[in-house]
Image 1 (cartoon, one colour):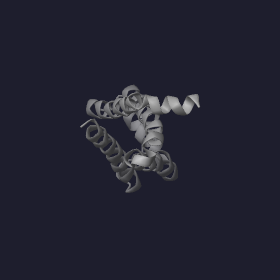
Image 2 (cartoon, helix red, strand yellow):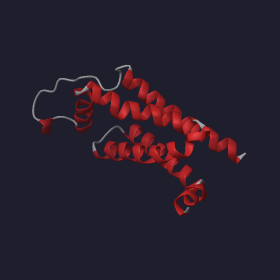
Image 3 (cartoon, rainbow, N blue to C red):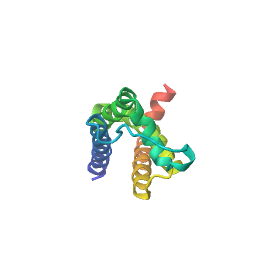
Image 4 (cartoon, one colour):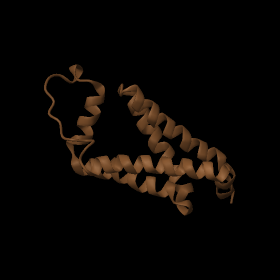
Length: 135
């Protein structure tokens, strides 16, 4: 039963990142915006979207490509351990950014949950990671 739960968590985590990557590659998430006025007058979350949307190549490389590769790695059993080690700090970084730049609460909760679930996978598989580190 534990194996099925962990597999489901891995597939959900991977699927979410692949969907986010699709949103970026298809041009639906980070669109180029025009900003008018002082930066102090613009919502913080909008500034983040402006930053990532300003350079389409950057948005495709980082974070879209990282999301796609990491999402696939965590879902594939042979690459899960490496994928989780990338997934946790990547989603933790996004969670911190979302909390600091006042993104909607639902977005902050979603990304924080993804980061926590990936950390849980690391904790559950800690013996395998420690074996690699101690050999």
